Length: 391
Image (cartoon, rainbow, N blue to C red; front, side, top):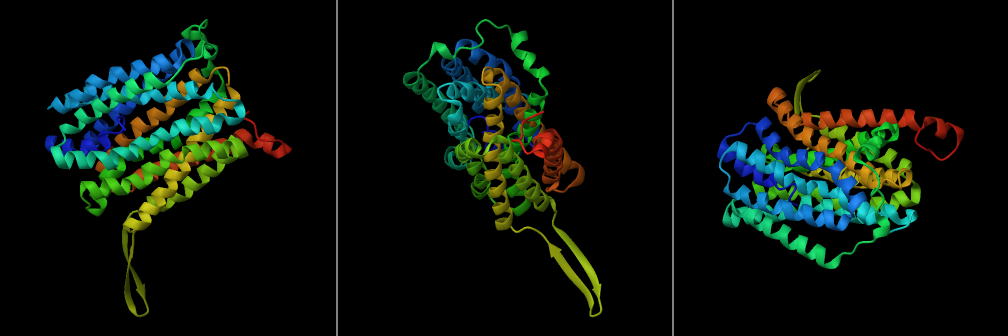
């Protein structure tokens, strides 16, 4: 919820500061950058010191910068505070291994999916933030969120526990743990996650503004419709974990990519007007997705991405059960960097082309890369009739 706050808060700030589309994209993406970069050390610290203490301290550290956003007046101040607030996004690489180690391998997909359903906080922001801004102004939103974060940190510390048996990296140095980067499976999972999670984050940050610009809706309605993507993209992650446990990470991820490929192809097509010369004279045609068709396709994409986020981490739990923290940190970093880069590219493409659906054209290309990579990576096992395994 906090990590995605600029998806809504950024709109009145953009108006106040007179930002262009690229500047807005950078503002929205700044929390994603720091939340991504910090994931690797946080995942390693989780292995070394335990998830409970790392998660608690991480939440406490974010409280002051969240509050100070309400006092900022200059663009650089929002960017700097956005970096600090973004630390909240690194919590995923702490919570995932912390939760996973309480469960057997057969149940980890579901367990991590339930934890990952916290991504639905992105949708919660779209429900709560517009109402707070309308009632008390945008400056009130950071105060409310800071108090919420503080209360959550205290509640977390009061009701959670630690198990020393879960510590796996106490005797390993940072250099030793980072050696997982030599395994090409990690890079493959990074690419998959940059699509299903990076794409989710990028669209979650961009869709409210997309509805405002493309369909002329006010902030409340635009945020509500954008939540039709964000909500299933978070809540249904638990379902994705269960499906991955049942059918395997490969099969689930493969079909997720195909669903996204079809949806992004349809969403990429910009509103088009053409005149066809017929025997009866000129015939005017207008092709465009109406808001309800557009929202329905976004809902399907959000559902697919929720399942895909869980299936990629099922890969990690199966292949790196002794090093989940470090690997999840690296993969989470890749996904987060995708979420950082995409809003900036969305804004730059819009400034360059003037076509809003260019955002979906970009995502369509990234899914194509994933499908090709998956096909050639798992083809030997599939051809032999064995259960597909990474090669």
